[in-house]
Image 1 (cartoon, rainbow, N blue to C red):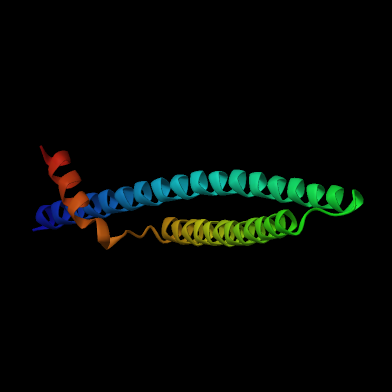
Image 2: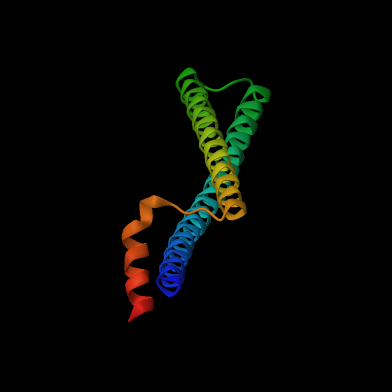
Length: 134
């Protein structure tokens, strides 16, 4: 009877460990993906901010020269507004990506402290369990 109980507990321990490992791998993959996306967004944000700076400099130069024809000035003003909107959008995406990465990190760290697991990966856990038995 004790032997059966030990085997059952050992099997349960392996199952929990496999599920925890799968969840940790999932979180790590998601974190890397979000960090990569964040780097891309930061790069795009920097590029757009540089474009806005260039357009503003062009507008300032045109004003010093006595102004641009109305159509050209209107087009430049429109472009500045578009770029500003894009930078704001990218800033929001960057913020969202950072917030999500932070939430995932906190959840992952809490899961590690609890020794918990993610039930969403139970198929992977069963596969891992089967693999360990065979």
